[in-house]
Image (cartoon, rainbow, N blue to C red):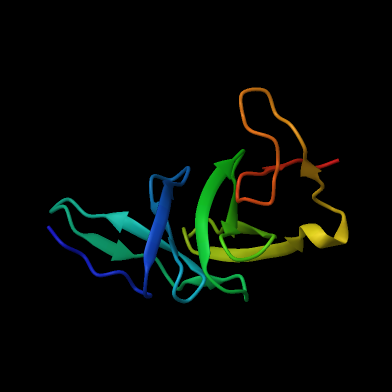
Length: 123
């Protein structure tokens, strides 16, 4: 079964608390919710939510909140999911403003070296 993504460049997904697939689409820097139908196809749940930046890639769910990051910037975007299942953008934070300091060392991971491996912490 093949389903086309609503927006270009589907990248990563996570299942939300309601069981819907929340998929990042890097081409439009959006999150779109998809519902699995009994026949194995996916249906779009409402509209996509954009973070207003470029190339949203990864997404993770934490305690009912969803956070997306990008390969080309230091932005972290928060997405909320409405009771209807439609994603909406909560806010975006840039690590350059000091709200998300770089983690210089994490047990079991290499130290931050501007090579793409970095941790994020919040105070």
